[in-house]
Amino acid sequence: MIKAPSPRRRGPLVTFDGARFHIQLRGHELAVTAVEDVDGQEDLLIELDAITHYGDGEEIAVEDMAAILEAIEEEAGKAGLSIAFE
Image 1: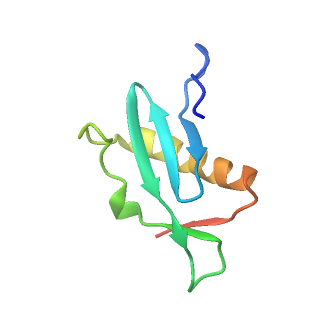
Image 2 (image 1 turned 180 degrees about the vertical axis):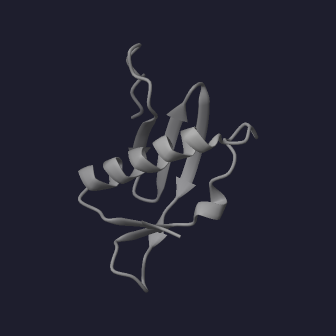
C-alpha cells in the first residue's frame, strides 16, 4: 500500500513490490523495474537508460534523478537488498 507523503516531505516516496520500485515525486509517478543481477555481486540491477521520463511523459530533471536513485537505494536497503545501477 502506498502511503500519502507528509506535507513536509520534499523527496520522493518510494515503495518496492518485489519487482518494481514505485516512485512519487512532485506530482509525478514512475515505476522502475529491477532485475536480478546475475553477473554482479548485487542483488538487483536497474538500467539507468530506462529512467528518463515519468509515467506521464515528462522528462526527469537531473536533480530529481539524483533524489530518485538515492531513494531507490534506501528502499532496497530497507528490504535487505543491494542494488547496482548500470
